[in-house]
Structure formats: C-alpha cells, structure tokens
Length: 300
Image (tube, rainbow, N blue to C red):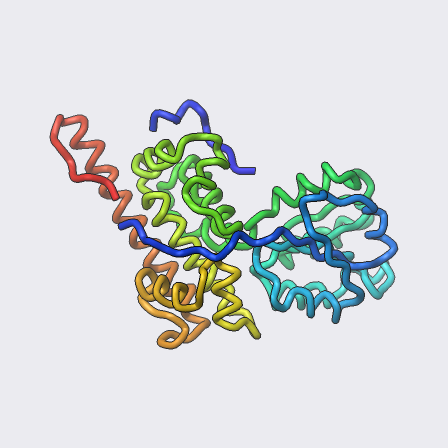
C-alpha cells in the first residue's frame, strides 16, 4: 500500500471521458495445491482455469486491474522447478499482475529466486497466507505493480519518496479506472491536498498525472501480442479507442496508426521524463521566488 508522510500535508489538465470502472477479477489455476484457498476475498469475481492453455486464454484479454493466482508447478513435479509455461505467460502479458502460490520451504529458495527474476508480482506462501485477509493483503500489494515497475525508473533522481508515493498511487488509480478523487482517497485526504503535493514535488497536477499514467499503461499494453486497440483502450480506462488515440497524440506525440507499437512506450516515457524535468525546475524557481518575496506564475 502506498503511504505518505502525514507531516507533509501542508505541502495543462486533460478532459477525458472514462470507461466504467473495471470489475475486480481473480484468475486462479485449478490445482490441488490452490484448492487450499477454499475462501477468497468476496469483492473479487473468481475465474477458475485448467492448465496452461486455459490460463493463457483467460489472460489474453485480461485488463491490468485483474490478477492471477498461479501454481508455478502446474503439470510437473516440484523437484523440476517452476514451469517455463508460467514464464511464457509473464512475457506474453506483462501488464497483468501474477502471484505465484506455493508452500514456501527452505529447499525452494532457488525456485522463489527464479520466479522473482521472471517478474512475478509476488509469491504467496500457502503455509501461512491461506486466509481471505492474507490473500486480500497480497492482492492489494500487487495492484498496478507491473506499471509501477515501468514508471518508477522514469522519475528523476531528485524525486522524493513522497513524490514517488504519489506516482505509485496514480498508477493504482489509473489501473483501477479512477480519477483525481480516487487518487486522493488512497491517502484519505482532500483532492486539493494532493494538488498541493504535486505542485511542491514538481509533479503534474493530479488530472494530468493520471492522464500520463493511462497513456503509459496503454503504451505498455500495446506492446503485447494480440491486443487490439479497443481492448487496450478499455483496459487503460478510456471510453473509446478514439479517446485513447487522442490522448496518445496529445501526450506521447503519436498513436498506433503513426508510431510502431514497440516504440510507443519509449516515446511516451521520454516525453513524460522531459515534462517532469521541466516541472522540477519550475518548482525550484518557485521556492527561490518565495524566499526572495517575488511572485511566481500559477501552477497547472
């Protein structure tokens, strides 16, 4: 869960019509090991799948708001280690959080290391995390983790931990189809407080920050084989593919019809990084102007 230091509370908007907020769905592999999870958080719709082909089919159109609970040994003996099929699914749909579910024992440390190297979002220990509360906490922790992993390296070295927390929360809000009020609700503060944090930390205003997260999420999804633009638009929180294309043109400087899909994330991330650098410089100027008693231009 993202956190912010409560002592810091005294710290070009885009108009986007959003798609309905996605239903939380949990894809779970049907194996004897995972049947130990007899009770799951009731707020999730559960979709049980059999075999790797079933998992691949379920993940094919899954939006990033969904999550997967997968038995990494499905179809093989545990002595053989995690199945390469899981690795293939992670490479096919890197935008969807996948949790490897297994009993953790000392002799499986190498398996856990391999799974983390494959970039599973987390490992759930069947020996200690079988309750609905434990599963819910694990799911809460992996929310938007694939997007966070791609976005955090774009922040400047000067970004504070508070700035990083706001960006992490913006990733979660974008994946969940939320807007500025939902972003503020993560911190249990008024939206104006988040606007003040963004201004102080050299981040775009909340609505524009969320617009950037949606564009970066869409660009990430467009790299995945088999994703249609309509599917990506829906998964990234846009009401139509036209809204997605317009947002990508405005922020990333291109869209799937004009830029190769494999280049969109790099192009969007470069522009986002440049915007952050400019906002950081403006924040420094505002601090200097404030100390010198000079007026400064408005924010946003």
